[in-house]
Length: 194
Image 1 (cartoon, rainbow, N blue to C red):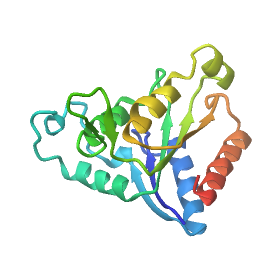
Image 2: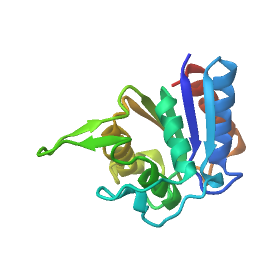
Image 3: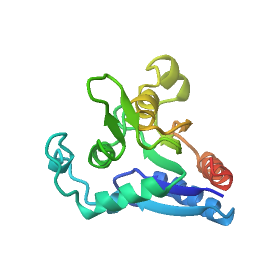
């Protein structure tokens, strides 16, 4: 059984992302996994650049950052459920990454080298993305930029592997039956710890 951290990355409570995160978490618990749930909407994430994350000047991070870092460090598998807005994650979720995935915690640059150490290696990740952009358009016209950023430049950069995705779209024109099917997909992933 896995230790799973489920982060609802929607900045507002009551979203479909929240429903997906809840479906995943509840099914994972029922399957015997240890689950920690975090909702972005409840965290005091600031869009200001954090001083404590400065490469040269390390101060004391806020309690919510230290708590989330401890939760990430303790997990085997990190699940992030997020909407896609303007081709990326919501600004508050990106600010969370900026505040939490710091040098010395998530990665460490090597002296006199272009390479780095991936300090969160040994963990996997699943990103569940909701969007209004149809999948074929997202893939063949836009080239899946959000998925490439999350896999290669954020989660993969810190050592998460494998990083898998579920792309649920288009949300705007989805029917109640389609949304129910997506909730069942999230639950199936939760049961499997995938």
